[in-house]
Length: 258
Image 1 (cartoon, one colour):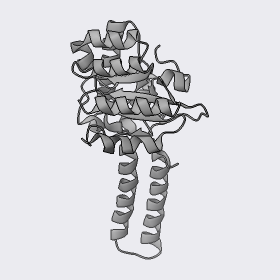
Image 2: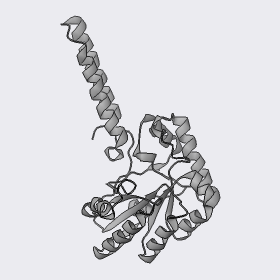
Image 3: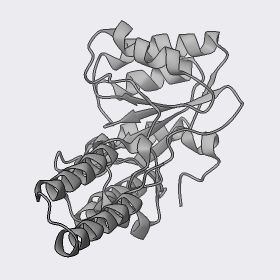
Image 4: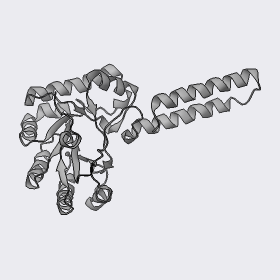
């Protein structure tokens, strides 16, 4: 699998060889230097916006297992309109989940956060403000976003979360440095439902159901009405197929709290 360091090193070597050839053998169009830069930018852009590639960070995107278990994960909550409805469905189907929560939402809805915890679901870190510019923050700013949310969650439930998911699944060297400094575990997904984009339940489920396999990590959200009927149908199908929905801690056997 391609990694940022390897691609950058290889690009630098090619660049030096091109320079040597240009100055000592035969001159050629400087256009080829631009082409090299564009190729590097292409790979880095794709790698930065697709967490499944593990281009910058070794995120856990699925778990190798033969057991019929999967992990349901919910981003962007807690939300007063939808999170508790999701919790009701999870309880009805005896399913566990992991909630990647935004710090400022936790501050506004501590009772919902406490309910998530009391019903044996995992609470994880999804930054404090979920900034749209997250991919452009420096490592100190990323650390502050993560650490502030960690403190908020710990103040409310008395547990320090060690699981993290970057907003939009964006990764880069600054995020990598922050994650390493904080010694936290980064999670991605291997099934992206697009439930915040697709409005028709059938289309969302069509993205999920055919891709279900043991160890899958499914990305959902608990911030909109559409996610409720999608989850209800998904839980019913999982039950029919004899799959069990477990937390990321159970799936990976990694401790979710310090």
